[in-house]
Image (cartoon, rainbow, N blue to C red; front, side, top):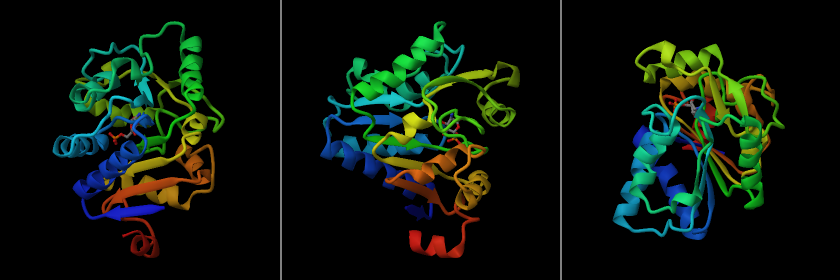
Amino acid sequence: MYKIFETVDDVSRYTAQRLIAKITAAPAAKLGLATGSTMKPVYAKLLEYIQQAPLDVSQLTTFNLDEYMGLAPQHPQSYNYFMYEHLFNHLNIPADHIHLPDGLATDTESVCSAYSSIIQTLGGLDLQLLGIGSNGHIGFNEPQTSFASRTHVVQLSEQTRIDNSRFFAEQSQMPTYAITMGIQDILDAKEIILVATGSNKSNIMAQFFNSEIDEQLPASALKQHKNLTIVLDREAAALLPEQTLKSAI
Ligand code: GLP
């Protein structure tokens, strides 16, 4: 299902409301969370709503999608830092309910398999929030990642390194590797919300729309999911067919 809104603000409001609805219906929900500039206004709206109408988040469990390898949690560009700054510092989710891949892991194989196992042991994710990279990556699952993948270490593509180096003072500081939940971990979620905003996402959203299910385009794996909502603003949806635009408003 596509939901297309006029502005980023509308997109963020809708997505935050979906999260509130999920938490209200299932206070002990397991949430898969994402980072990136797309998520900042979503989390800001979520916090705003919770401030207006308090919500019990003390039973929630969260799993983040990905993390850069080699960055400590205190590093301002780490996804751990992002999540605490934009969400966790402002909510009383118990610390031991918050899971992020460990970017400093040395025994990566066991750390990765433990991450996917915990999610499965807890019964899987109830809702997975996703952004999308300009090359169609979800989490850090780059083109050609197996759709059967579980949490793993990935070498970032050139495109991703170019896109994400904007957050680092110098491109040389941009990590080369990351740890990411796999595509199968994502597909196992009972519900998925993919959010994309801005004109820099219009090309990839058109590619996604037109694509077959193909490992060259990681996000296309989502087309086989039974409960997927794609939330776009006008700019990200600009290259979708008129008919889709009309029916999604
Ligand atoms: C990053 C993250 C993704 C995120 C995507 C989009 O590389 N690994 O999880 O969804 O790129 O980021 P943004 O929202 O900043 O465009």
